[in-house]
Image 1 (tube, rainbow, N blue to C red):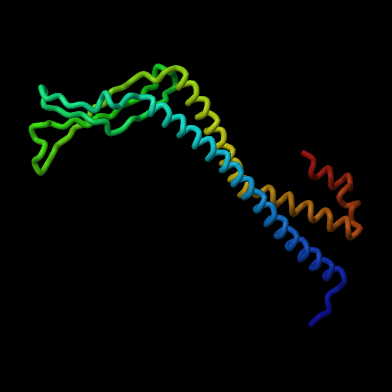
Image 2 (cartoon, one colour):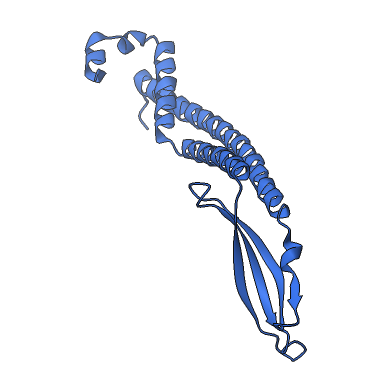
Length: 191
């Protein structure tokens, strides 16, 4: 086996050291990004819970008991199945929908009690609309922040920048810093 020259050994040492350093630094970078993703997710969850709380507050403000009725004259019973809050682009496009299930009393007690759905749309008041849209806007921004952090995890430019910086440090340590500042080399990379 032929002996390797000092230059070949230095080259191997340089390449080996750079690969290890880049791997370690990229692992740290990914850990930092994951921490950032987790932090941003926590902010998003807090705002999402705040939005859900606002929706629940609006739902509870509706007097649903008035819709849980029985009309012996008509032979119909109604019950509230759900209350939905629909926030549109404007307060006029927004509503609170009370979903009702109606039952024919003449059929109650048989093996099959058919029900059919009906709903009532109530206006969403301006204050509730403004509060919901404000929280929803913050929720959307927080979601965008999470996506931005997730994209950082796969940013290939970071690895190239880390690799370049590690190489620069190693070249400086080897006494080749003048190469990094050479005008002809700089002209090649100037945009």
